[in-house]
Image (tube, rainbow, N blue to C red; front, side, top):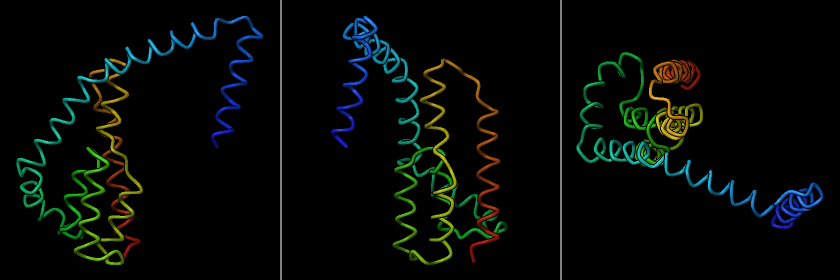
Length: 165
């Protein structure tokens, strides 16, 4: 793999030299553009991480889990799944930790464990993704993306509930 990477970089350098491109100057321009993009991403990323930390450390996740209990029971979702469902759109690592908790409490082959696995694999950390991409593009209104993500998540949950016994 390292040899392949070195070969690709070599081909790029050779092509640039053959086309009389200032390869080092182009690299520096690209690095400068990347640094500016990273600087633009920092504020929305920090805001999202702060919000996530406040949600988990304040106990709001547990409160919302308790408040959603009638809804999750009506849907037929195991109660242990709710924290993962709440965290998945926000954070990959947080939802992975919630899934590990489900595995340790309920078991990997339990209904909750299988549902957690299916939902983890069929959903995206949409808030994180939107923070990065929308922050880079400077877009401030994203209700369509959030609505589409929610619809996909609910459809995935419905299919999982039908197929996972």
